[in-house]
Image 1 (spheres, rainbow, N blue to C red):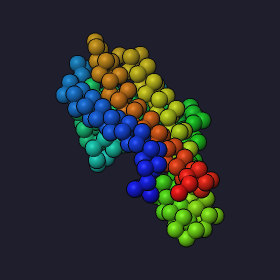
Image 2 (tube, rainbow, N blue to C red; image 1 turned 180 degrees about the horizontal axis):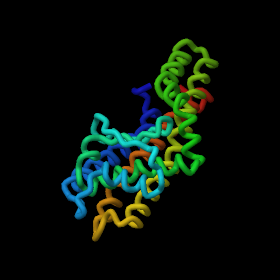
Image 3 (spheres, rainbow, N blue to C red; image 1 turned 90 degrees about the horizontal axis):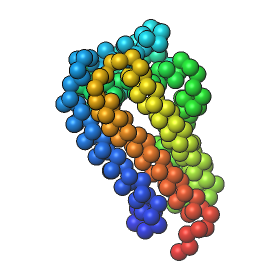
Image 4 (cartoon, helix red, strand yellow; image 1 turned 120 degrees about the horizontal axis):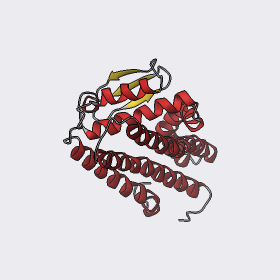
Length: 228
């Protein structure tokens, strides 16, 4: 499969876009992690201020391990921030913390795309992990039905990446509005916030492009679009 030129025709756009997105994220975060907020507020303080301002006192904030491992867990109502975000009074940390806080606001408001994404998590994890192997096994065994099972399972992971797009874009939009309306950032600090969050958005686009490309390749093989 990996030696098939057709595979790379479908995989290369997502791969290149992913490399571009990673470079932008690292560049923007590294640049603005060195720019301190004028109010000297850490990422954890930004998140707590925004949550309390919206009455979400039940959402707790925890420090978690890993570089940029920040996420919001809707099941336990916990906002987990990486050390670089939790402890640092930087523009980059404020942007990441506000973005993850945006997910807590989505959860509280019953934002439908977030509900769909949360429901798809088990299927997406299973599909992205085992589906390609099931598909390959079906091809090797000349068992078309098994290969189609792999495609269907992988399609669940693709749907997850597509639903993720509006969820993440909306969380960033909420973060930007709240940071401005609550006056946690001043001056031109929003320029740094925009740079960090806009760069992060490209990672989700890249993931969606890569997943769709892989799915199309699978379908093309099974429907006879590729003739040897």
